[in-house]
Amino acid sequence: MYKVICKENETQTEFESLNLALAFAKSLDVFVVIQGGEFEIVGKFGVDTVANGLCPDGVAYDWNKSSRIGQTKR
Image 1 (cartoon, rainbow, N blue to C red):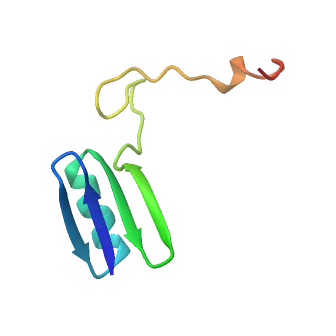
Image 2: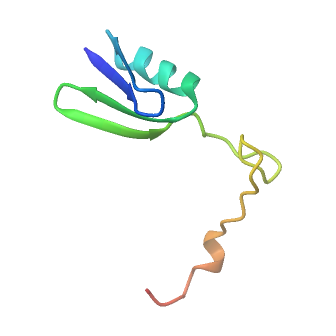
C-alpha cells in the first residue's frame, strides 16, 4: 500500500501500486509525500522535460554545467 499525502489541501489517498501513486501525485501538481513500506518519497512530481529553454511551467531553464567546470568548491 502506498499513501500519497498532500499537506496543501490536507488529503491522504492510498493506492495499491507505486505507479498509481506517482500518477496521482503528478496530476496534483503540488508538493506531496509518498509513503510506502520502508521508504518515503517527497517532491513535486511531473517536471521531467525542458523544451526551448523553458520548464513545463514556463520558467526559464538557464543552469549550465560547463560554466561550473574548473570552479573551486564553495
